[in-house]
Length: 400
View (cartoon, rainbow, N blue to C red):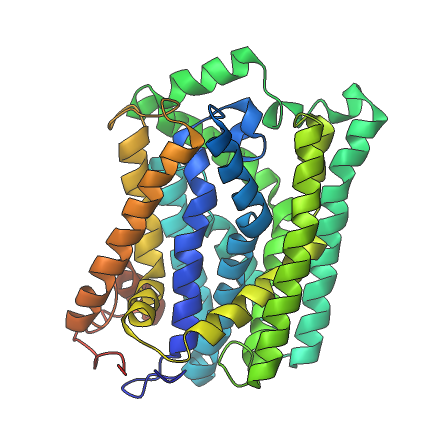
């Protein structure tokens, strides 16, 4: 399979990376779907039943945590630039209508489905990213790194606050080391009624909006890096093979080694508040690893094949697959569905991940054999273009 689908203007390499990202991000989100939120950063807070559960956390922390979200943000920035370029003189109008529609979808998702929504953040940050859309790759890279550096400094303030004393860290301590009352409250909420969960989602949305500047610096930084990587040819497979190999080997090996050492230190401290907050400060290591994953994925898809084709199809339908994942996971774990919230260990929760991955890979390709877009991609595109878009099938993705 070539990096560009000959039957259309789609860049298959970017679709495949996006497919890995939308599948990989569930590896981290699954814990928040299945158990109290503190378990995402502190396995001892909840869900640590056996040594296997600890090893699952170690793998997540060393290989995935923060990197899949970074990959997703990177591709969002690149795709935004791709769409703006293709829209030509209408680029600004199309872009801001896309962000407005995404904001509407995000608000619906955040309030009515799941509090862990990222679409509202992407809509706001994507609108801001427009300011930089016509910059050169070098400029995009420098501004992106500056935004990420600012986020790294903000994150470093948390362990510094812990060292300063309990009064300085009281505001975020419950998110890392919750007491029994907070855990019981969360369990009761998500095992309860749909109305109660929606009311809490609305409250959570208000908190997210007030702290958006904090997480927005990371998201904007990754989006700008994605724009730079698209302009510079990295995301479209235009670099030499040895450059991709160097990025994949060096970034992933060194980054994983550093994360493994930090994980060993965190375990030794019993996942106390200092350990939990320090684990949030590894962005300078994770950024090169995100680019290393890009390089690794592009190396693996060069020969094409059925797996690459299906992952790319999942990436073409990332918006639909992302929201469908939220609906399915909430039905599995929340009280208005099967009510498994807090009843499974960390390792068992990953069975739901495997099932959702299988669903994405099985249904995305047959759908795109018949239709031009995923259901929500079609709705988003129609809103951005101001008219209903045709749903005719496009030519099949190239096969070897």
